[in-house]
Image (cartoon, rainbow, N blue to C red; front, top):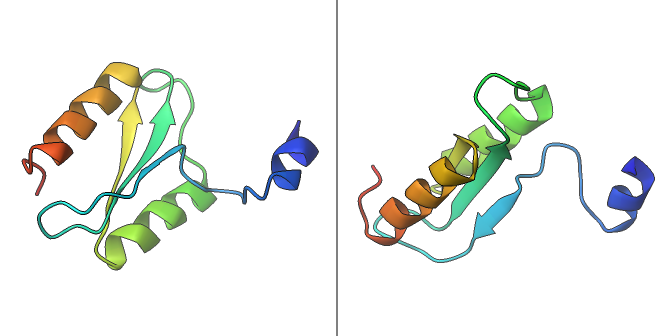
Length: 82
C-alpha cells in the first residue's frame, strides 16, 4: 500500500484534504483527518506539514472525524476561522 501511495506522488505527512480557496487572511484550508479522537495520533511528519502550512498563511488543522472536518470547512467558508 505504501509503495502505491508513493507512486501517486504523495509524500509522508501530506494532509488528507486541501481546499485551495482563499478566505479572509488564509490562502487555503488544509485538513489532516483522523477517524476518531485519540484512536491514532499525528505523526511527526503530519505535524510538521500542518505547521509549515500555518507558517505561510494557510489554515491547517487536524480534525477528529468527518463531522469535525465538515464543521471546520463550513466555518472556513463562512469566514469564521481565526
